[in-house]
Length: 58
Image (cartoon, rainbow, N blue to C red; front, side, top):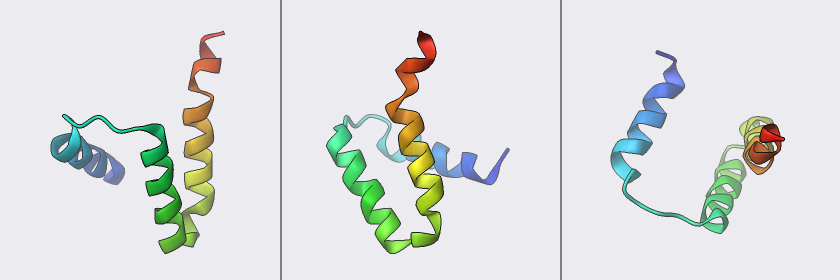
């Protein structure tokens, strides 16, 4: 198991039943980067990947 898998599992356990908007997610990602600028590249890549996820089906 990768270290990040534990964080993903915690997210599922704590918030798995919630519904969130993309706006909420974007605000949380922006806040995270503001507090942790060293992760800006990773968060940007993740956000871009999420934004383009449907393009892979073409």
